[in-house]
Length: 351
Ligand SMILES: *[C@@H]1O[C@H](CO)[C@@H](O)[C@H](O)[C@H]1NC(C)=O
Ligand SMILES: *[C@@H]1O[C@H](CO)[C@@H](O)[C@H](O)[C@H]1NC(C)=O
Ligand SMILES: *[C@@H]1O[C@H](CO)[C@@H](O)[C@H](O)[C@H]1NC(C)=O
Image 1 (cartoon, rainbow, N blue to C red):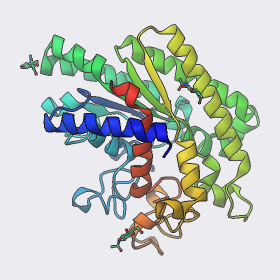
Image 2 (cartoon, rainbow, N blue to C red; image 1 turned 90 degrees about the vertical axis):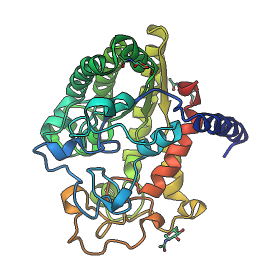
Image 3 (cartoon, protein in one colour; image 1 turned 120 degrees about the vertical axis):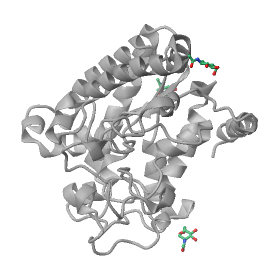
């Protein structure tokens, strides 16, 4: 941890302790949009093959129950909710928990296999980002009924909004879809994604959101399944995919800066998860990990979603030793590290 980071971390811890002592979260609510990295169970309610509501998913979660999270335990967004001071997680919007006063702390609209590009979600019968936004509008009407107009508007403007998208657009669509990769270069495809991203943020802003954090792409070429599928037997991170991710991330940063300049009062932050995850993959032992090439579930080379199930052969005993839980998703232990990193870089969203 850099000195500036550790100083701000200390400051933040002090604020957190103060806040927790007063039993008051640092934000009234949290809203989550995007893909499987942050989906807390919306896909359970859809006719899609992209699901994670069966063992061994969730085996290290509360009560060892699968919830639809694509992880053995908590997501980075769960740790973030805890870090902010919530004692429960914003409910998956399509779940039966998403009603009444449970909605006061926000809601989670994310859906596995969704992305910035609506056709990606449609390909997998997931919830496109534009539809997630429609659900959020519906939420706003509900919360007015639950908390009254004045309280609702302070929830909406004071809340933290988290967006995680883009990885599925590349890995589950662009790279395997000739209709896309023959027509567009990765750079051109990123530009299309940027257009949807800008529209999404502007729509969210119009609906009252002011504190928005968006995660960068991870090192796509280091995901275990990506190495297996695109890596020509090298067992190394696929350089081309990582290059595409870096180029996308630069565009994401530039587009975000333009949005900040254009929309007054908008606090928009890009959370870099590329570098922290890349560091975990290339230097696993520095953070107490034993394995980064293979994921815990099954052979660890490919399995995700329905292919990672209780009959998968080879699933590891202790996922804390693994950077990745399944072929595409970090383990709870890795998510904890990513969330701590997110917290240090996200202070300006909180205060
Ligand atoms: C608005 O919030 C205040 C303070 O939390 C609470 O006392 C009040 O009951 C809320 N209003 C409604 C209509 O729920
Ligand atoms: C873009 O990246 C630069 C350099 O890393 C950083 O200072 C800036 O805050 C970033 N912009 C946004 C909107 O996150
Ligand atoms: C699992 O691995 C972690 C990290 O190496 C270690 O701290 C923990 O003690 C292990 N748990 C068990 C039950 O072996």
